[in-house]
Length: 79
Image (cartoon, rainbow, N blue to C red; front, side, top):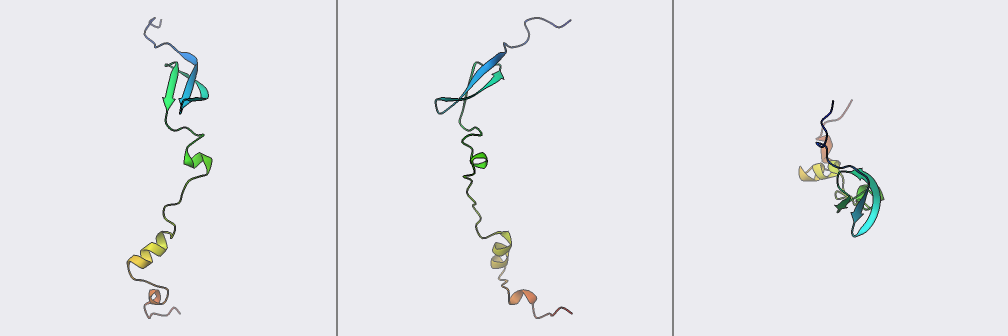
């Protein structure tokens, strides 16, 4: 039989706070959870994610190694 009094107290209606506001209710071993980021303000979920690399990896590679559209063929012609 399972030992009694070894598990933490379960709070089925624990409140999650973000910036001082209750954002959701979950089950937890703590009655209150304070978070900085949650799905309601995370850039990935809200669609406000900014693209850092606007040029693209291929263009950056070509520029870094001095390859342009004319030089990429290297004088060799495809048959």
